[in-house]
Image 1: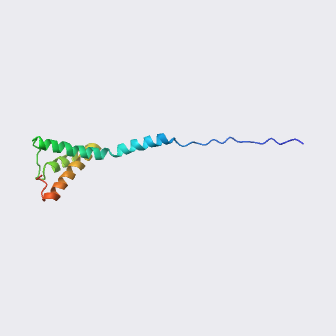
Image 2: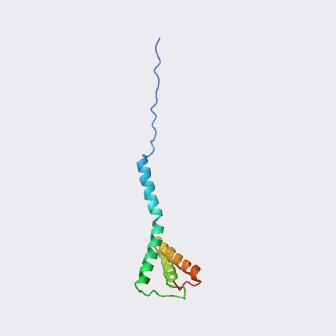
Length: 109
């Protein structure tokens, strides 16, 4: 009696990415997502240093220097589609909102 030859098929499966690559990718994505926070904080720092150094920042429409810079950065970000300019606007407008909530006027510090 002849034995029947068994047919075997090779199974190819795809391995998932190593854990190291996944962690590195996640860290890179997290850093890119926090870019807006870093830009907003840096805008506040630059604005604070400029005011402390005595640089006169124009006050348009009586809304205060931070709001003026924030509105200007927002317009620049919208017209040029610059994300960094919009993040700078977020930081400056947050400072203006804080000043308004604290004293009732965005013009005083």
